[in-house]
Image 1 (cartoon, rainbow over the protein chains, first blue to last red):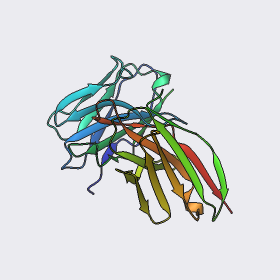
Image 2: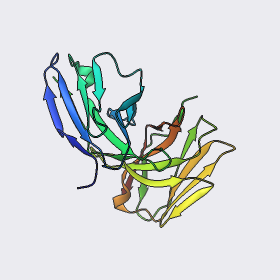
Image 3: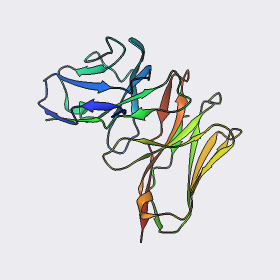
Length: 114
Length: 110
């Protein structure tokens, strides 16, 4: 499979717990993006990496959120002390060294905080 | 002005109809634009890219009007399988990332 893969597909957690999601991009793609999508809205940018460097973070990314891409390959997104408002679909995408050709998205991780 | 704005719909059209969606954007320096399709509870998938004045792919035509800063998507001979949400996408800020509209929902009926 040469697409973007995300794990897990679904996660239900209790408020206050920490969760971590993983994204494996298309192997030749240097850029990796995280987005969040809630019902009725388009995907909202959270952060992106160029290889292992995190180059931009949205104001949506509070201090409870942290993302890493340690070797420039897979990435993890961790949410600490989850809140009900964190319930959303978390989408990972990857691209070549430019946005000029668009992104390829993974299937997403659907988080429900109860 | 928002970076990208779309009419959320829904657009309810019969099979065989022609339907058009518009989208406006604020960054006049944007060079490349996209339409993504998103099915319910699935990830967005690239439908079409728009680099200059327009692009056509089968029943789908995307057009760009730089002077008025809008992009349109035209679907001819609508099929039931076209029912989905269509996301207008433009480069955001420094063009290091893409900014998505809220999407326009299309429902094609018999």
